[in-house]
Amino acid sequence: MLAEHRPLYKIAQALLIVDVCGWGKKCSIIKMHLLSWALKSSVRIDLLRRAVQTQSLSLPVWGFDPALAIALQLSIEDGLLEYEGNSLCLTERGRDFLRVIIEDKDVLQFERLHLESIGKGLTESIVSAAAKGWE
Image 1 (cartoon, rainbow, N blue to C red):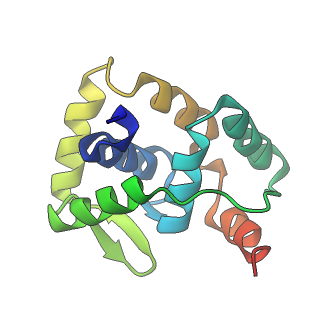
Image 2: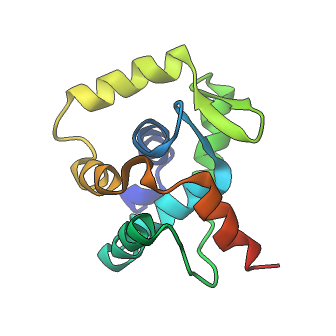
Image 3: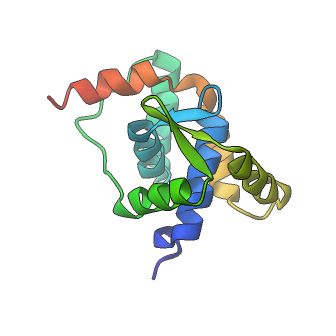
């Protein structure tokens, strides 16, 4: 099994996405899938960096990862994430687990570097506007 399909990896990635790229430590599921999809390729990351600079994202569609969907469900069941409106947010337990991840500088180095380069600049409105193009 590829490491990127393992639930624990995807859970850690999801918590990092919420922390680094989510406003108020919360993030929509569609934005989480977009960022997870982007982390699979440097070209995709560059597309999101440009979207942050231009405040516009033009993608016909991006992939929804079944492994991420399972990880999000497990995160909710384990009390690491919870719904707040249409977004998922970190719980206290999720923040504790994230602290352990962040303290180990060797864990998720690639993801940290690229998520931090995007930061909070990829807003929910940019993501929503891109997704509306699917309809």
